[in-house]
Image: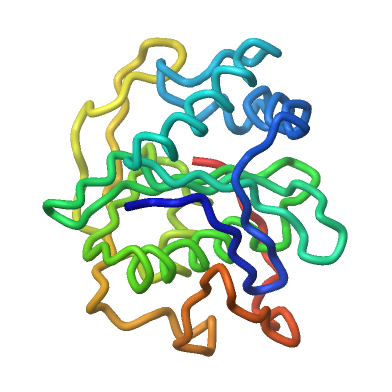
Length: 213
């Protein structure tokens, strides 16, 4: 059973989205770089789209088939981006992850830090075994995030996504298992939880561009 939690790790606080975040959500879903790689069913880049985004995330927690977090700075509580796991299947202990980062927060490896924190929590605390990550072929920045978090390349799904121009795109598929080795860049094996203490400092590797998927 999924219950909303807050996770502290790598200088970040991951928490469920709130009504007060609507402005940040709208900025995120209206970002041209986000729209460039979005699927045709992405939320509209408008105030109503932001409310739809918030409603979908809130309902996902309620149903128990989605975890969705605002990625915030642990010290300032500034919203930096989004990370989520959807289509969670407890019978097969699997889910699909995604993320985006606000333009002003890029260059700090926010996506990689947020994804790694959520991934470890989903494996240890929630008990999932397999997490998939898909991005449009050509989105090299998202591919680098997957690599940093040890999501292995598994192949390409041809024509699996229609973008906002209704053009079919191939999808690059990555996945990580609970039994896989964690990424060496993160330098620790403990996973975050609702009671976890944040590390004393953000890892030194945390300083390169992030882009949405």
